[in-house]
Image 1 (cartoon, rainbow, N blue to C red):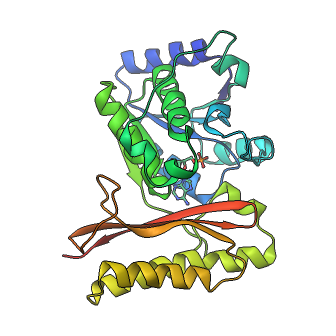
Image 2: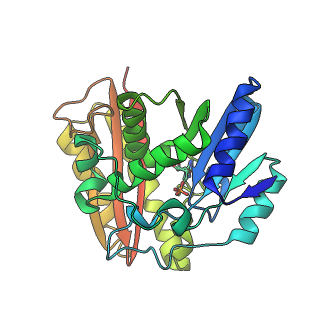
Length: 282
Ligand code: AMP
């Protein structure tokens, strides 16, 4: 596995692969790698000749009061895991290489960026769309892999790729969970033992809501059920949102229909966790 920091060199290498007719799979991450990231890597390895991962904690997607400085970083362990998975290249730029002095052009994500997490993290998805556009231009992959864990992010990236004519297939992969159902996340490292146990309530809330949909509950009953389950856990200190959405528009639904998205963002102290579940009623 080559580790390359300079965008220009990655660009040249990727172009050579594409010119030789090789398919390139790309997995963008912020590091502190876990089973969720590694599932994307495995999928890319299966579907492409060449797999490239990136690790970059993107400063422009963090708000001023967010966890940029303390975001978990463990590059040695990440490199070890990536080598074990036998990928071809790790792109590991630093802030100055991605945002050199004078950088001022940004991608503006549209209305989808204002829903769900966008209400609580203003500007976040513009930062994500900007860095992903840069990473797409640097790696020019055949396919790029994202997790359903960040459902809204994947939807926004798909829309961006379509709107800005990136000739890249965006593949959305299933959520990988811990044994008790908690969605794997780099931010789980922030949780103490009690919070870690309490965090599984999020998945249980989603599961209960899904079961209630299948047994004919109304939108308002299901919403209250989710909120009640989350609020019954004292270590869940705030619920940013917990509701039922249209998976295409991210609008809250008013009645049950075939395809639904259950989505939650909740805080355990300082740690904000998100999770979701797609429900197919038919
Ligand atoms: P991050 O490093 O958190 O920016 O995540 C990088 C990629 O991994 C994103 O596409 C995430 O959606 C995906 N990802 C994170 N957690 C999981 C998970 N538990 N299961 C599947 N994909 C995940």
